[in-house]
Length: 178
Image (cartoon, rainbow, N blue to C red; front, side, top):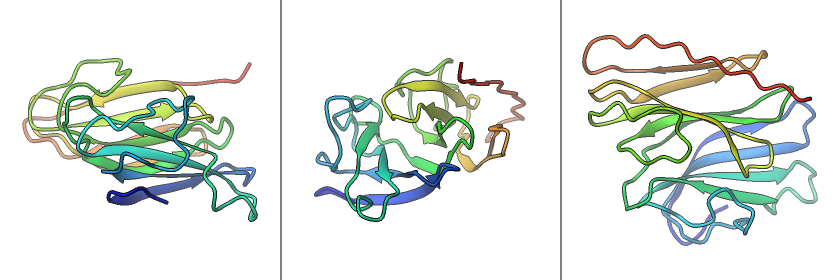
């Protein structure tokens, strides 16, 4: 998987039915396979963007991505990557966390904390075409994400370092299919 630039994979996740496989990482490529008009972000935004690629887990179709999307900051600022990626067991939503060095990640529910970096948590729907939740986590210092996990109830756990003081935050989000 990849284009003409550099891709680095950071996370892989599969739904509980074993039908859908997601790969996430960072890219400098402008021509990732699977990008199309329905991708959330069809063009690379910065020097380095996050990418998500979806595969059908069928062994015959596995080598061909169903769809892909970029996730980045317009204007050339590099997203520093994702720490891990998980797929929600009951919903199939794609959860990932990472570090961003500037304002501008799309669909954030809060403001960038300032400083050198902030952690972020983003949740895409199973089709990879829309963001269900996205939030910066950090204060006015360098606050990178160092770990991420998702439990069986789809509770997200983001860890990181804090340059100044202590950050205490509780994020609540629940998505239910109707």
